[in-house]
Each structure stands twice: as C-alpha cells, then as structure tokens.
Image 1: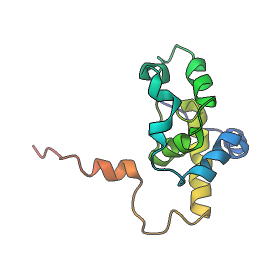
Image 2: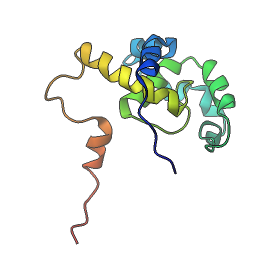
Image 3: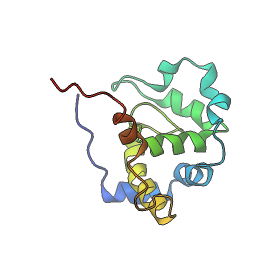
Image 4: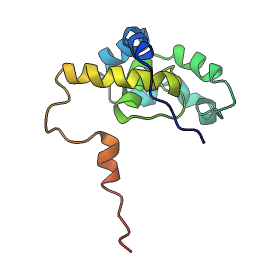
Length: 132
C-alpha cells in the first residue's frame, strides 16, 4: 500500500473553487437524514469502493445524479474519510478539498477554540487500549 501524498498548493486552490465543495459547505448542516435518500441505497456498496487499479467513473456518475451529494461530501470531509467515492469525489480529490474545508470551517467559526478533536479522534478514544 502506498502512502497518500499531501495535496499541492495549486490543487488546494482549485479545490476551493470546486462547485462540489461549495455545495458541501452550503449543505453541511441542513439534513441529518441525508443517507436515507441517497442514490447509493439502491446500488451495491462495492461500486463506491473500487480497487486502486479500477476506475471510479461509475460511482462518480451515480453520485452526480444524487440530491444529497453536498451533504454526503460534507460528511466525508467532516470525518476525514479517505476511502471510496463520497459526494461525487475520489479520495485524491477529497485530500485537496479537506485542506480547503478545514480552512473554511475555521473561518466560519465552527471550529471554535477548545471545541475538541475531530470526530475520528473522538471515536478512537472509545477504543480500549491493551496495556500488556
């Protein structure tokens, strides 16, 4: 398995202008039940998690027809999910979007000082640690 590289500055700049990211920013807190209405509910989940050597075109095309695309992408960026297709984006696209997302959320005042760690870090604290 190869290690994902950090996005380059020009990739982050392009991500800031990406309409999918702008939609995710505007829809990030509108609907908690978005998963129940996704197009993905009627498709094999493996479609959205292709092998590294396989194209993700089919999954991205399905996502582009979905009404909850923005909320889906917002969720993936919020939790830092780096696998599969979410909100019509590939993991590589989301790495650049994640940098832009974190900067925008902090500017919007959502990431208040002392608000605590990201969701993924909070979940890891719930896993028991073996002290042996």
